[in-house]
Length: 470
Image 1 (cartoon, rainbow, N blue to C red):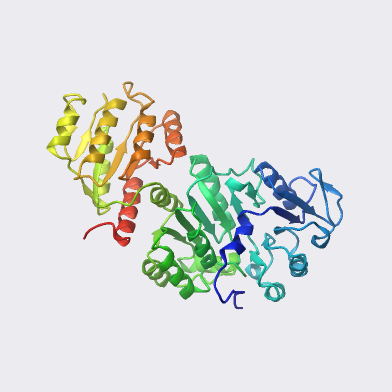
Image 2: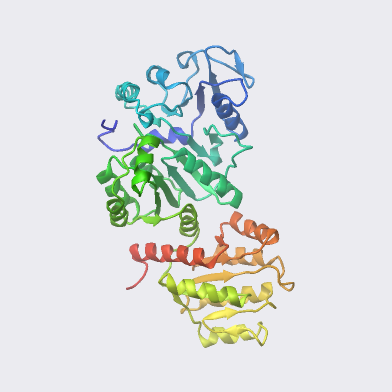
């Protein structure tokens, strides 16, 4: 079954209606608590959506205090419709949406090719083919979350699944379960997301379309993808090659084993493809492959918040020697190098650090570290030509280290011309300090291994972009 494509390529304005709709109709809206149509209505309201929210239900007169319409044909002019009704009614509803001049449609309903229901899938596809000007996301998806605009089409209650703050990362996921889990986890960590898209079975809008759209989005600094299968591999690869020249793409692939491939077919009706072929395609398209959920966001946070690096020399500044030893090991193992600052830089540092501080490849301020020491050491590393990237290990428990150190780091980070990331591990107090840093777009990590891998991803992408002289 071919895709419903525009031969002239994607029109960015077409997809704008999913993220900036002036009016949204929920077809299948419900007044009954915990029904999908009710949760979507509630989420749009709680997200602070400012446009017109239109419930569509044959049997109800009012939902959440809003006048209910018996069909989309009788509803006011609508930019976007969310369809949350049984699969058998969806093809007819798609035609009604098109006739009502709806610009964009999200089909959250399941029960199509992902469960082997080819007849209803074919009927839906044929209905969509008649109206190529109306773009469709899904079926079998969660739709979109655009925090800044108050658009939240996910049918998962907010009290059970968190929503992230606004950010610089956009994330497209073939799986609603994977996507929503990552959104919840990112919300807990205060990681910002600009746009989240769950595209499901992708009968119309594909991951390739989304790559093109997000690449043209000024608010998106990094694109994250979770995909299980590709039915338009060549087109995707060519688009990825073009997009990665300006916007980093971090991708996590599901279905890399035989059982995983079978699960992908039954999940979204996708053909997972040979793992080695897909891996080679990612490399060819200059995408950064993540192997785990954490890798996905670790890489994305550094790539979205840090400048490209000019080299591989990492300066470690710490107040805990043992943690620095582990960090030094992981930096080397990842293929990066330890920096060594100039004598001039060390002389400046000796004026503020305790006599027993270690000033070598690793700058160990010891447990007597203060915010002033971190400030002077970081400023020296920023100015030193022998340093390309800065890894700050900040262990907060020592009593002399003022909590205001996080604000010094934030100030330095805002002015920085070199990547600065923070590693810190301990309990609740430490997590509170890290959340302050994350809210100001300073990437934080618990373990040195994760930090080193993220810096290596930044280095590799910087190398591809020609920022590093070989």
